[in-house]
Image (cartoon, rainbow, N blue to C red):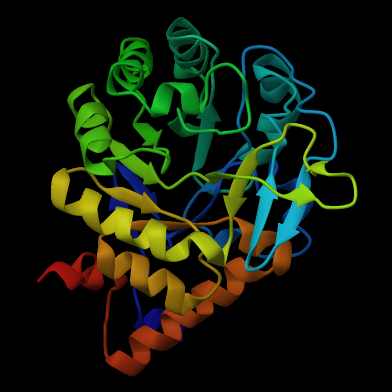
Length: 306
Protein backbone atom coordinates (compact mmCIF):
# COMPACT_ATOMS: atom_id res chain seq x y z
CA UNK A 1 0.00 0.00 0.00
CA UNK A 2 2.75 2.47 0.95
CA UNK A 3 4.49 1.98 -2.42
CA UNK A 4 1.57 3.70 -4.10
CA UNK A 5 1.86 6.90 -2.08
CA UNK A 6 4.99 8.95 -1.43
CA UNK A 7 4.71 10.47 2.06
CA UNK A 8 8.22 11.91 2.04
CA UNK A 9 9.06 15.60 2.23
CA UNK A 10 12.37 17.47 2.23
CA UNK A 11 12.92 20.66 4.22
CA UNK A 12 16.14 22.46 5.17
CA UNK A 13 18.17 19.68 3.60
CA UNK A 14 16.56 17.01 5.76
CA UNK A 15 14.71 14.08 4.22
CA UNK A 16 11.57 13.11 6.15
CA UNK A 17 10.23 9.69 5.13
CA UNK A 18 6.83 10.83 6.39
CA UNK A 19 5.61 14.36 7.23
CA UNK A 20 5.28 13.44 10.91
CA UNK A 21 7.49 14.36 13.84
CA UNK A 22 6.93 14.61 17.58
CA UNK A 23 6.25 17.77 19.55
CA UNK A 24 9.11 18.41 21.93
CA UNK A 25 8.31 17.51 25.51
CA UNK A 26 5.70 14.91 24.63
CA UNK A 27 7.91 12.07 23.46
CA UNK A 28 10.79 12.09 25.94
CA UNK A 29 13.89 10.79 24.21
CA UNK A 30 11.97 8.18 22.26
CA UNK A 31 12.79 5.08 24.26
CA UNK A 32 9.51 5.25 26.20
CA UNK A 33 7.54 4.87 22.96
CA UNK A 34 9.75 2.44 21.07
CA UNK A 35 7.72 -0.58 22.24
CA UNK A 36 4.41 1.14 21.52
CA UNK A 37 4.84 2.47 18.00
CA UNK A 38 7.04 2.01 14.94
CA UNK A 39 9.50 4.89 15.05
CA UNK A 40 10.25 4.43 11.35
CA UNK A 41 6.87 5.94 10.60
CA UNK A 42 8.29 9.22 11.84
CA UNK A 43 9.96 11.68 9.52
CA UNK A 44 12.04 12.87 12.47
CA UNK A 45 12.21 12.53 16.24
CA UNK A 46 12.09 15.85 18.07
CA UNK A 47 13.29 15.25 21.59
CA UNK A 48 12.51 16.89 24.90
CA UNK A 49 13.92 20.37 25.46
CA UNK A 50 17.55 20.47 26.59
CA UNK A 51 19.22 23.15 28.71
CA UNK A 52 22.89 23.74 29.58
CA UNK A 53 22.38 22.40 33.09
CA UNK A 54 20.04 19.69 34.48
CA UNK A 55 16.63 20.95 35.58
CA UNK A 56 14.15 19.39 38.00
CA UNK A 57 11.22 21.27 36.50
CA UNK A 58 8.37 22.92 38.37
CA UNK A 59 6.88 21.55 41.59
CA UNK A 60 3.63 19.57 41.45
CA UNK A 61 0.82 19.62 40.63
CA UNK A 62 1.98 20.32 37.11
CA UNK A 63 -0.43 18.47 34.82
CA UNK A 64 -4.22 18.65 34.56
CA UNK A 65 -6.72 17.47 31.95
CA UNK A 66 -9.27 19.98 30.71
CA UNK A 67 -12.19 19.70 28.27
CA UNK A 68 -10.55 18.85 24.93
CA UNK A 69 -7.11 19.65 26.23
CA UNK A 70 -4.26 19.30 28.68
CA UNK A 71 -2.49 21.96 30.74
CA UNK A 72 1.11 21.29 31.75
CA UNK A 73 3.62 23.21 33.77
CA UNK A 74 6.45 20.68 33.64
CA UNK A 75 9.00 23.43 33.31
CA UNK A 76 11.63 21.93 30.99
CA UNK A 77 12.68 19.10 33.29
CA UNK A 78 15.70 17.50 31.60
CA UNK A 79 19.08 15.95 32.42
CA UNK A 80 21.16 18.75 30.86
CA UNK A 81 23.08 18.73 27.61
CA UNK A 82 26.06 16.66 28.75
CA UNK A 83 23.93 13.83 30.19
CA UNK A 84 21.78 13.90 27.06
CA UNK A 85 24.84 13.44 24.87
CA UNK A 86 26.29 10.61 26.95
CA UNK A 87 23.13 8.75 28.00
CA UNK A 88 20.39 9.37 25.42
CA UNK A 89 22.01 10.28 22.12
CA UNK A 90 23.66 6.88 21.45
CA UNK A 91 20.30 5.09 21.48
CA UNK A 92 18.64 7.77 19.36
CA UNK A 93 21.36 7.49 16.71
CA UNK A 94 20.61 3.78 16.31
CA UNK A 95 17.01 4.43 15.22
CA UNK A 96 17.67 5.53 11.62
CA UNK A 97 15.37 8.54 12.03
CA UNK A 98 16.56 12.16 11.68
CA UNK A 99 17.05 13.76 15.09
CA UNK A 100 15.92 17.27 16.01
CA UNK A 101 17.18 18.60 19.34
CA UNK A 102 15.10 21.27 21.09
CA UNK A 103 17.38 23.80 22.85
CA UNK A 104 16.60 26.34 25.57
CA UNK A 105 18.43 29.03 27.49
CA UNK A 106 17.90 31.61 30.21
CA UNK A 107 19.75 34.22 28.17
CA UNK A 108 20.43 34.81 24.49
CA UNK A 109 24.04 33.85 25.18
CA UNK A 110 22.94 30.46 26.47
CA UNK A 111 21.14 29.77 23.19
CA UNK A 112 24.44 30.49 21.49
CA UNK A 113 26.30 28.19 23.88
CA UNK A 114 23.85 25.36 23.29
CA UNK A 115 24.10 25.77 19.54
CA UNK A 116 27.89 25.75 19.71
CA UNK A 117 27.96 22.65 21.95
CA UNK A 118 25.74 20.65 19.60
CA UNK A 119 27.06 21.96 16.29
CA UNK A 120 29.80 19.38 15.93
CA UNK A 121 27.87 16.42 17.33
CA UNK A 122 27.47 13.79 14.62
CA UNK A 123 23.96 12.58 13.92
CA UNK A 124 21.98 15.68 14.86
CA UNK A 125 19.92 16.80 11.87
CA UNK A 126 18.68 20.15 13.20
CA UNK A 127 18.23 22.29 16.28
CA UNK A 128 14.84 23.58 17.37
CA UNK A 129 15.25 26.93 19.14
CA UNK A 130 12.54 27.03 21.79
CA UNK A 131 11.63 30.64 22.49
CA UNK A 132 8.07 29.82 23.45
CA UNK A 133 7.85 27.56 26.52
CA UNK A 134 5.27 29.21 28.84
CA UNK A 135 6.24 27.23 31.94
CA UNK A 136 9.61 28.68 32.96
CA UNK A 137 10.29 31.90 34.83
CA UNK A 138 13.45 32.67 32.83
CA UNK A 139 13.88 32.26 29.07
CA UNK A 140 11.24 30.38 27.07
CA UNK A 141 8.20 32.45 26.21
CA UNK A 142 9.88 35.58 27.60
CA UNK A 143 12.00 35.53 24.42
CA UNK A 144 9.21 34.66 22.07
CA UNK A 145 6.69 37.39 22.83
CA UNK A 146 8.91 40.36 21.90
CA UNK A 147 10.48 40.80 18.45
CA UNK A 148 13.76 42.12 19.83
CA UNK A 149 14.34 39.27 22.28
CA UNK A 150 13.25 36.64 19.78
CA UNK A 151 15.71 38.10 17.31
CA UNK A 152 18.51 38.08 19.90
CA UNK A 153 18.04 34.41 20.77
CA UNK A 154 17.90 33.27 17.15
CA UNK A 155 20.85 35.47 16.21
CA UNK A 156 22.95 34.00 19.02
CA UNK A 157 22.16 30.45 17.94
CA UNK A 158 22.71 31.22 14.24
CA UNK A 159 26.17 32.62 14.97
CA UNK A 160 27.30 29.36 16.53
CA UNK A 161 26.04 26.63 14.24
CA UNK A 162 25.68 25.61 10.62
CA UNK A 163 22.95 23.11 11.49
CA UNK A 164 19.45 23.91 10.23
CA UNK A 165 17.67 26.10 12.77
CA UNK A 166 14.00 25.48 13.47
CA UNK A 167 12.50 28.28 15.55
CA UNK A 168 9.46 27.37 17.67
CA UNK A 169 7.09 30.30 18.04
CA UNK A 170 4.67 31.17 20.82
CA UNK A 171 0.97 31.72 20.10
CA UNK A 172 0.85 34.15 23.01
CA UNK A 173 1.50 37.14 20.76
CA UNK A 174 -0.62 39.70 18.95
CA UNK A 175 0.90 39.23 15.50
CA UNK A 176 2.30 35.75 14.74
CA UNK A 177 3.24 36.77 11.18
CA UNK A 178 5.46 39.56 12.50
CA UNK A 179 7.31 37.15 14.79
CA UNK A 180 7.82 34.77 11.88
CA UNK A 181 9.32 37.54 9.76
CA UNK A 182 11.66 38.55 12.61
CA UNK A 183 13.14 35.08 13.04
CA UNK A 184 13.34 34.59 9.27
CA UNK A 185 15.47 37.73 9.06
CA UNK A 186 17.80 36.37 11.76
CA UNK A 187 18.59 33.18 9.90
CA UNK A 188 15.91 30.66 10.81
CA UNK A 189 15.59 27.83 8.28
CA UNK A 190 12.25 26.46 9.44
CA UNK A 191 9.46 27.75 11.67
CA UNK A 192 7.54 25.48 14.02
CA UNK A 193 4.28 26.57 15.56
CA UNK A 194 2.47 26.64 17.81
CA UNK A 195 3.68 26.03 21.33
CA UNK A 196 1.04 25.85 24.07
CA UNK A 197 -1.30 28.65 25.09
CA UNK A 198 -0.98 30.13 28.58
CA UNK A 199 -3.88 28.88 30.70
CA UNK A 200 -4.99 28.02 34.24
CA UNK A 201 -7.59 26.14 36.32
CA UNK A 202 -8.99 27.09 39.74
CA UNK A 203 -9.67 24.49 42.47
CA UNK A 204 -13.03 25.65 43.83
CA UNK A 205 -12.69 23.75 47.11
CA UNK A 206 -9.22 25.11 47.85
CA UNK A 207 -10.06 28.45 46.25
CA UNK A 208 -6.70 28.67 44.56
CA UNK A 209 -4.98 27.65 41.31
CA UNK A 210 -4.64 23.91 40.75
CA UNK A 211 -1.16 24.13 39.26
CA UNK A 212 1.64 24.89 41.68
CA UNK A 213 3.05 27.22 39.04
CA UNK A 214 -0.38 28.91 38.74
CA UNK A 215 -0.22 28.96 34.94
CA UNK A 216 0.59 26.27 32.42
CA UNK A 217 0.46 25.59 28.70
CA UNK A 218 -2.80 24.40 27.14
CA UNK A 219 -2.46 21.82 24.36
CA UNK A 220 -4.75 19.36 22.61
CA UNK A 221 -7.81 19.69 20.35
CA UNK A 222 -8.97 22.82 22.20
CA UNK A 223 -6.22 24.88 20.55
CA UNK A 224 -6.30 23.27 17.08
CA UNK A 225 -8.32 25.96 15.27
CA UNK A 226 -6.00 28.65 16.64
CA UNK A 227 -2.90 26.73 15.59
CA UNK A 228 -4.32 26.09 12.14
CA UNK A 229 -5.06 29.79 11.69
CA UNK A 230 -1.52 30.73 12.67
CA UNK A 231 0.04 28.20 10.29
CA UNK A 232 -2.09 29.65 7.50
CA UNK A 233 -1.00 33.21 8.36
CA UNK A 234 2.69 32.38 8.67
CA UNK A 235 2.65 30.51 5.34
CA UNK A 236 1.53 33.76 3.71
CA UNK A 237 4.10 35.88 5.58
CA UNK A 238 7.42 34.05 5.07
CA UNK A 239 9.18 31.81 2.58
CA UNK A 240 10.33 29.28 5.16
CA UNK A 241 8.93 25.77 5.52
CA UNK A 242 6.65 25.22 8.53
CA UNK A 243 6.28 22.44 11.06
CA UNK A 244 2.68 22.72 12.23
CA UNK A 245 1.33 21.47 15.54
CA UNK A 246 -1.42 22.13 18.04
CA UNK A 247 -4.07 19.54 18.83
CA UNK A 248 -3.46 17.26 15.85
CA UNK A 249 -5.06 13.93 16.80
CA UNK A 250 -6.00 12.29 13.49
CA UNK A 251 -4.96 12.05 9.85
CA UNK A 252 -7.76 14.47 8.99
CA UNK A 253 -6.32 17.02 11.41
CA UNK A 254 -2.87 16.53 9.87
CA UNK A 255 -4.24 17.04 6.38
CA UNK A 256 -5.76 20.36 7.42
CA UNK A 257 -2.38 21.62 8.62
CA UNK A 258 -0.65 20.44 5.44
CA UNK A 259 -3.25 22.20 3.32
CA UNK A 260 -2.82 25.37 5.42
CA UNK A 261 0.89 25.38 4.63
CA UNK A 262 2.74 23.05 6.99
CA UNK A 263 5.30 20.81 5.29
CA UNK A 264 5.59 18.63 8.40
CA UNK A 265 3.21 18.13 11.32
CA UNK A 266 4.04 17.27 14.93
CA UNK A 267 2.02 15.12 17.30
CA UNK A 268 1.97 16.14 20.95
CA UNK A 269 -0.99 15.50 23.22
CA UNK A 270 -2.06 12.73 20.84
CA UNK A 271 0.93 10.68 22.05
CA UNK A 272 -0.53 10.66 25.57
CA UNK A 273 -4.05 9.75 24.47
CA UNK A 274 -3.01 7.05 22.00
CA UNK A 275 0.66 5.96 22.11
CA UNK A 276 0.42 4.65 18.54
CA UNK A 277 -1.05 7.83 17.14
CA UNK A 278 2.00 8.11 14.87
CA UNK A 279 1.15 4.86 13.09
CA UNK A 280 -2.52 5.70 12.89
CA UNK A 281 -1.90 9.14 11.38
CA UNK A 282 0.63 7.75 8.89
CA UNK A 283 -1.80 5.05 7.79
CA UNK A 284 -4.60 7.59 7.54
CA UNK A 285 -2.53 9.90 5.33
CA UNK A 286 -1.75 7.02 3.00
CA UNK A 287 -5.39 5.93 2.83
CA UNK A 288 -6.58 9.48 2.10
CA UNK A 289 -4.02 9.96 -0.67
CA UNK A 290 -5.04 6.68 -2.27
CA UNK A 291 -8.72 7.61 -2.11
CA UNK A 292 -8.05 11.07 -3.55
CA UNK A 293 -5.53 9.76 -6.11
CA UNK A 294 -2.72 11.91 -4.67
CA UNK A 295 0.58 10.23 -5.48
CA UNK A 296 2.78 12.38 -3.19
CA UNK A 297 1.75 14.10 0.04
CA UNK A 298 3.84 17.17 -0.82
CA UNK A 299 1.34 17.95 -3.59
CA UNK A 300 -1.18 19.20 -1.04
CA UNK A 301 1.14 21.42 1.02
CA UNK A 302 -0.38 24.90 1.03
CA UNK A 303 -3.15 23.96 -1.37
CA UNK A 304 -5.71 25.90 0.70
CA UNK A 305 -4.03 29.11 -0.51
CA UNK A 306 -4.48 28.39 -4.21
